[in-house]
Image 1 (tube, rainbow, N blue to C red):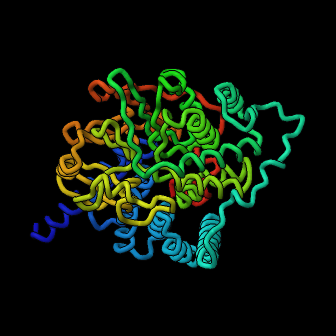
Image 2 (image 1 turned 90 degrees about the vertical axis):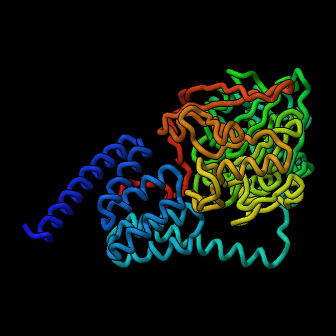
Image 3 (image 1 turned 180 degrees about the vertical axis):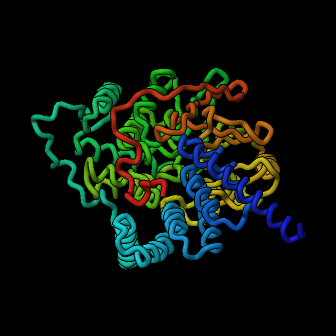
Length: 489
């Protein structure tokens, strides 16, 4: 046999093996085991790096695991290999949408519609994306005209009437009480709606409380005191109730810190956020909330919170939520030793606690810089920094953590932002802890949830795990933008 012939045979064998790996990956994907799907798509790519389908399929698996940066890179690679591969344009558009890059997404949807004029799904996505691009342009135009007035100025809460047939909880003399909170949680549990007057009263009050806080909140735990730190709750209201069931209601002697991403994805985000805001009003010194990357307009527009508020109340109320979210602090320091933030550390060395204190947080986060990093970055096992799998901020290694802690005389950091199978993960030699409190995330990840107890005496983290509880038959992402309702395309 000629050398060419044996090379040809070897190549055919490699391609056949790659196809088997792709099938294996497809089966894992169908079972929603996205990590293994990615693993076998990657092996298929290594055997046959010129097959656009492997990159495209892996791109979809990355989308499902919220690695939007990797998803975008794979979709782009698929199109470099085959510029006529329509699914590649779909994937790239979806990745760009997830990253809030609406103009880039529109360009790809345009290509799909041009090639497949009868594809209803493509047409709908193109129109939806076009609408967002126009809306964004309009918002930019009016934002330049004047300093935006607060929604609070255009509300006449005093004269909103509570109808006689409303039997739900009401604020007492305009104030949140423990009785109100208990009634509210039961009311929400029965899928009932808080009267809009009460919701507005709470939002206006919580905005005032949050706006007086610094970007870095500092608290001291006495020897005998403990605090409970919770990670993402993502609109999983019934799991939030379960945390309070397991760990006790918030109180002056049972303080909590919720580390961002209260809303989006789960379809009970309003119930979660109003409950958390209620406890913030009841115990302003002992109930703490930090901002996550999902307490932002772009995310809320895509992942359901804006849709949910508009469905249950009004667009005006969403505007007020947006204003309130901008005042959420970005970090919290416990006993000058433990720093808590939603995402992680910074794209460059040298950031001090003083730099964090100086961040002007009352805005939508920029695409880069310290505020963006605090909301978006992720740890990685290897040293140094690398491009983020999410397409925003960076990934930072154990050496980055070590240098930051040393410079700022801290012991370790606690962050959230990533689903973990056990509900938590300890990395970087115990100096970077992740906690995630949305069990069986999006009804499909099968993960546990967790929360952490920290005691003033030693600040050693104690982990408590829990599993998901049943919730009413409303699917996650029920209010999300139709562009994010991803199908296996």
